[in-house]
Length: 191
Image 1: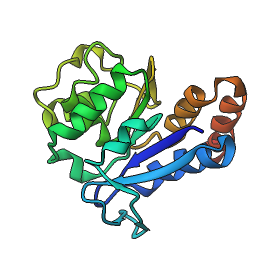
Image 2: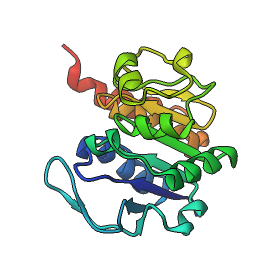
Image 3: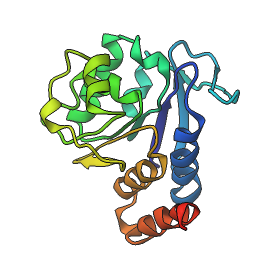
C-alpha cells in the first residue's frame, strides 16, 4: 500500500491539503498520515484541528512513499536538519516529494531544488525566505505546479494542479483522469 505523509505546521493551509489528501485517499486508496513538528494536533488557518500520527523526527517517516510539505507561515522560520536530512534521503531514494507554498522553503533549505525545475510563491519571495538556497536558476514563473522527476512544487494559489501532479506520479495509469480533475475545477473560473 502506498503511504503519504502530510507535514503540517501550525497554521497549515487548509486549501492546499484539501485538494491533494482527499484525491490520494479517495481516488487512489493511498493511506494518508499526518506528521507535525511535535506530534501534537495542529490547527489550520481556517480553524481545522488535524490530529497527528507522528512528529517530524519519527524514524518511521522514512518508510513513506510520498512526502507532502503543506504550506504554513511557520515554514519561514523553521530549520531542522533532521527533517532536511529525511527529505534529502527521500529524494535520493526516488520517493515522491511535494512542496506547496511555504513548504517550498523547507525544500529549498534541504537542497531539494538544486538542479531541479521548481516554483513557489515567487522567485523573489523564495530567495528572500531561503537566501542560501541553491537552484534559483531552475525557478519557473508559472501559476501551475511544476514537476521535475519525482519532485512537485507549487505556489499556494495552485492546489488543484499540485494535487493532479502528485496523483500523476502516484497513479500514472490513470492517464487522462488527472486532466479531467483539473478541468473539473477550472470550470469555476470560466466566463
